[in-house]
Length: 393
Image (tube, rainbow, N blue to C red; front, side):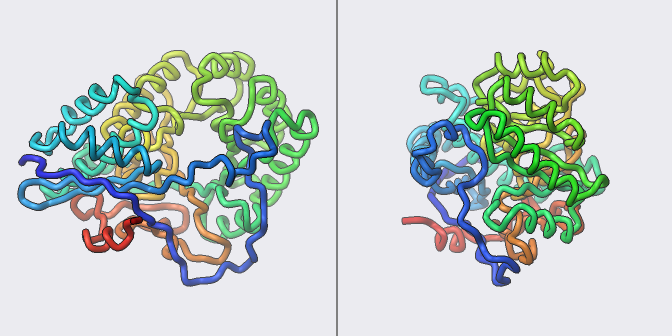
């Protein structure tokens, strides 16, 4: 079956819950960021504002698959003006070849980065299409279920309702693991370390000893601050520290590992294609690899990363993997993935998770676990008209 068309469009899939939050939203500066050294720039000043991209790949018989990614403005053009002319007419079942084609034709302007987002959207759409044509869920095409259900953790990416209120809601929803985000980095010096420690201490006291607690630094620290912070956080038994350096600073990752051999370290959401993961695994830089299925190169790349991890005795926990069916199907099939992250704010306190589904057909987490749909492809329950209504003109 040949590819008849590839279309990309900017879409707004923001959930619109009906239940009002039980606590008011607050004006906050947000969690720590790599721009913390330039406080004159608020996040609204330097963030791109680019929206989500939907990619539809259509076969000759009219069957279509859907992939999603972010960074709309440039990514949409890469898909429509570069990838589509090369891929249309190719065998839509040849996912290995098509992934390799996209990786190689984007090499002149850099496969790692914006091109990787575009590859992800097309690749995931192709897997969705393949599943529909074969009338099987994608997780079966990846080898079948490896686990009965996927344990999930909740990430407090939206701190505007207050971390204490959000953690209480996550526990009420049945999550047995939660992640919080630091508020300070190296620019705040010793005071920042003290206040970050206070945040973690309060969270540990609130969730108790039987709930896993993770900490995310979102590319904001340096080697010295990371080492000093982890020494300060040692009494609170965090499961891992995540995303603590700029993604390109592989030398820094080596130094942190040398100075913190006892710590569990995780990163990878801002690494693209398979090569940084192969290097990190071979050098033992981190314990947990965290690719994003919608950013790293799609299902095809993520499966390779899972195999790399297994060969080195590491685990994979995909960034935001439980937000959409793509990561759910991958985690359900891959032995290297022990748990999954629900992020994008999870849900405001008091708002049911069912009301926070951005893409219909995404299985909803219940009592801290999720099982993907067994519908063909990724089980996405939309029409092209539904997608057209959410296109941003």
